Length: 224
Image 1 (cartoon, rainbow, N blue to C red):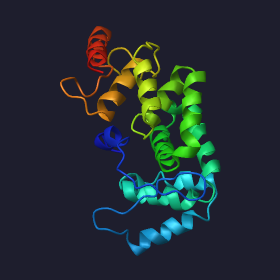
Image 2: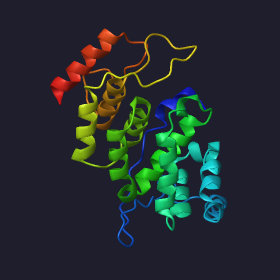
Image 3: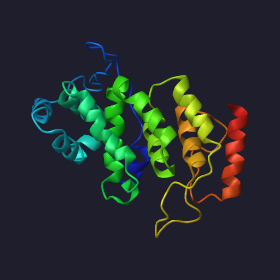
Image 4: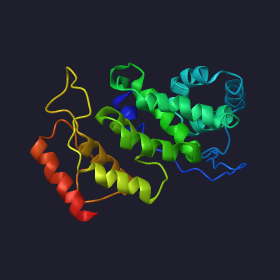
């Protein structure tokens, strides 16, 4: 996966609201050309016949990762009749403290994130509870999947409170420069993206010193 794709992989296009039965789901609609090709629609229908682990594995393919509306329609169609089970399976990736070491960790967390976006009623409260009861690595995962998810004040409060958490939450890589990211750094990045905040750096990373990060975080706090 390209560096650009890795950076952008957590961006999420708008979805219309679709509310079958008691639970709210966000049913994707095609954009751009207006419809997916018959071949893609056929492949999506095939996913609905697979087991949940098989679907998640199939969604790692570049054809889905490179086309968000295709990914989202696939998730909705494959899981709309078993959404609670799919959300619970996706939660397993968020709960993993080894996700950063996995060669498919970035893809798996993205697919989980999109699943939560499609089925917010089944996922939001569980994710907030998980954040409150977990260690730094899992809290990082929760922030990444909730950062751009609809959820109103509850998500805003979580992200703002996370700015106070200086726990280190990422592994040092051999190619890393500087100190690894902390919870507050990850929360800063999601808040700036979520609310399109201007006049501050859009992203802070390990290339920034701790003192620089603290300065930017305090600036953000003063703006919120």
